Amino acid sequence: MPGDRVMAMRVLLIEDNDELSVNVSEYLETRGVVVDTAGDGLTGLHLAVTEPFDAIVLDLGLPGVDGLDVCRRLRQDGGVQIPVLMLTARDTLDQKLAGFDAGADDYLVKPFALKELEARLLALVRRSLPRAGRGTVLTTGDLTFDVGRLEVRRAGRPVQLTPIGLRLLERLMRASGQVVSRRELEEAIWGDDPPDSDALRAHVHLLRAAIDKPFATPLLHTLHGIGYRLEAGHGVSS
Image (cartoon, rainbow, N blue to C red; front, side, top):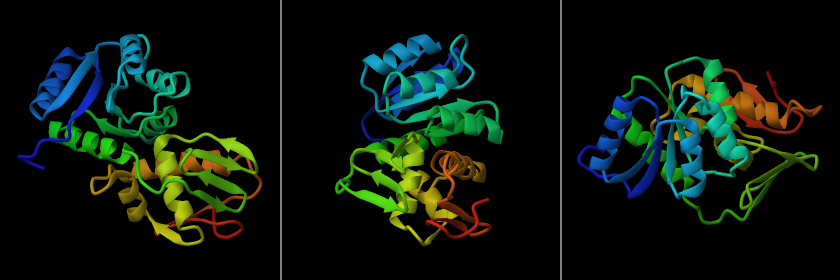
């Protein structure tokens, strides 16, 4: 999107590296983004729950209260559901799983290009905008998803999912019984700019842990090298 300005939005940047914070803020402000900054987790938490933001850029390695704890508190204690883009210097599957499990929507590994940061923020904010026709209850076996209320239940028990987990589940449930390719799922979550292949694997791992592991019968089935299918009583779930 060279030459274009991003949609008007307000972003909270929680980053303790002053040089990086200044570089990100100055770049985004030239693109029409209003940027508020915090240099530590506690200040960031306070701003996130008291001020209206369209997205949060959150560094993982914060002093005191680290990024994982900040994200977890925002989701679980503060009820903050706005998109969170996590910044990390560690590019491992376990680290990504931890970030997504804490409630992050996307991540960038340092060092990163400012244009990529902008693109990911724009995609996250666009996907978080309300959509028409969401008053639907999807059902697969004993799993239900009230899309309007963002409530998931299996066998009557509530299931807690991250924002991306909800989008992933919605795509799979709308195609219930059919195979959804990895590429289709990546496009549903990240559009035309997916991160590396570990990201989808991490989110599928978390989704399976939430909707299948506590129950006797698996619903989420893997077709290796092809994709995934949500269906009661069929397929391979490894």
